[in-house]
Length: 241
Image 1 (cartoon, rainbow, N blue to C red):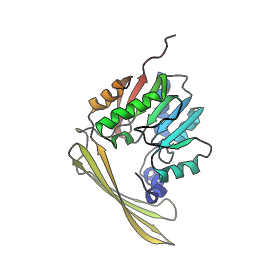
Image 2 (cartoon, rainbow, N blue to C red):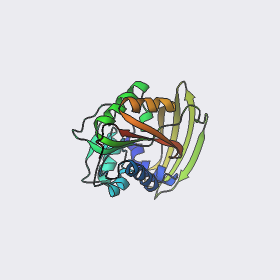
Image 3 (cartoon, rainbow, N blue to C red):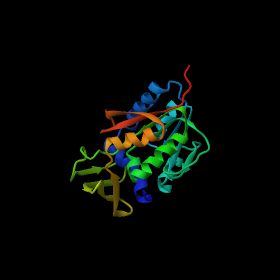
Image 4 (spheres, one colour):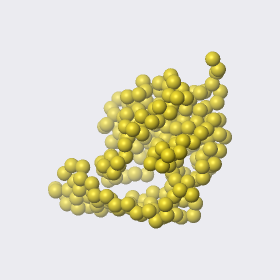
């Protein structure tokens, strides 16, 4: 779970490294509306600091967010006052209502076991109306993961300079990414901290089975989200006109 040091610089890091939140949100909106043209309500699970949700809010009449990290949620609440934002775990939450769409971006679903993925898919289904749409961004599949991948960036968003260096390697059926940050500021000097992320390298068929077992008709759109793709599911049980 992200801590306050990273939450503070999260948006700067990913935006300046090229993550296009407006374009990604537009693509997700288009995919939802292709399957449910009248969709007007949306829940963003693992919404983080609201990077996608701030743009999805422009496309849907009612949006809410769910996030496990209190530090990330604090940033989102400052950014989106008045928007319902809940602290909770995607594996077991109950907001007491359903939505037209549920989205879960940035490979957040891969931070759990296969059994937990199935439970999460069922939780998504409980929060969708019949005919509702789920959008899930996966992590890399076992055959597409780049073993030993290294990235390095120096970012200057404002008065700070942020250096980021990462290394990713495989650990059994998962990947581990170690990310080192050095942040330099005129007043406080230089500080260093490390973030470590474990993502399960689920095969495509496992995502599809979890969604299918939860009651979704499912398809995969390759090439989206920097090459990881998107899983789209429509909850069964919609009344036919």
